[in-house]
Length: 383
Image (tube, rainbow, N blue to C red; front, side, top):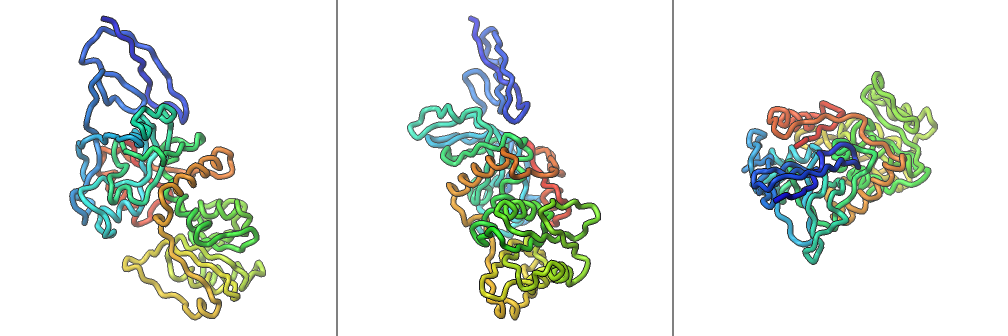
């Protein structure tokens, strides 16, 4: 008996597939391939996948490539073929046991970009409008208390799916979701940056810092950004760059612009005490000054703060946690961000590094690298 099947090619471009029609003799050994993966035979799907797993926390040596059960979906869920999974510092911290809420055994990974290959609506019927869609995402619990994205497949609630920007590849999209979420929480939820605000961003070159700068610019703020060196950096034209060449570099630059005691917002994306305390001295003394911190470089989490400047200027200090928005709020933000990127209002990453899921040496190296911040390019795992 002759049968006909449609074979979709592997991913070619952000929104393009090539479809071929194949006629063949019936055989249980013939493999049908779709754009997600060569993962099922005719009428018989494979039930396993490759994933990075750790049985206990404490060391990167605990992380290993395993063959595990492929997630099965229930009504209201989708199965996504992971094309790229961004590596974040929190992923490394979870594996090392720095985050006390991580449960084991666990597949790490928060960020992803990929293709929906299965989807069921709340009634259990196929959600055809989502099947084949290119999506991206990040999550505050995924990779910590539920299995994450360092795998070939990940399960996502249907209501939380967000279509990725068409302008970005899967690798580019997966490298920025958490960074931009942190930037949004910093600028919108915590600092409430407004048009006309004078803003200092410490660490404007990093992934979060550069996203913070774009968001502040979009709101009409005046932006000053710090850089450890300007020798090989070309800051965007809307940032007034400050090279940290002295202990008073920030105060000196702000004074040169006639803005001493007129800085409204300080956003610290780096976590070093010296530039932080230098910047605090430039802020408004009328009780409206807002300070947001999201990092600390010291291993013990401590650095000295000029509290006299804080209380004499009546400043407000807030800490940024990426989990303060709930999942529907994150989806709403990602939908908005995709539109802004596709419109050309926001720019994607300047560079990325790719890491093969099966190359444990490269995976471990990338996890160590992000903890030491030794690269400005975000590493992305490609299954």
